[in-house]
Image 1 (cartoon, one colour):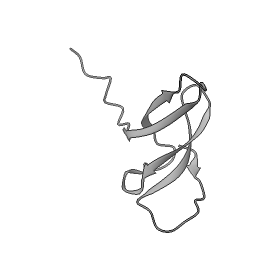
Image 2 (cartoon, one colour):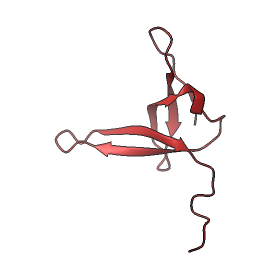
Image 3 (cartoon, helix red, strand yellow):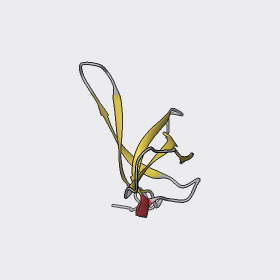
Image 4 (cartoon, helix red, strand yellow):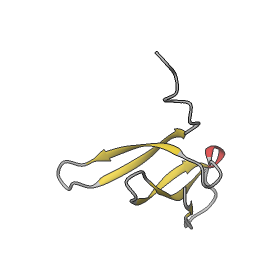
Length: 73
């Protein structure tokens, strides 16, 4: 996570944050205030791509703990 973006309007339970995804691209996403991880924390986001305009949008899913891939099956 890079940092919080300024938002217009009143009080909200979500805030816009600028994040750097694994491919190096920087994107802005909404993250619920109570789930914000301290910088330089990692989060899990979901990417959506529109077929018509080839536009990518991202949605916050959860904080990344580092334990997700460590379980042995």
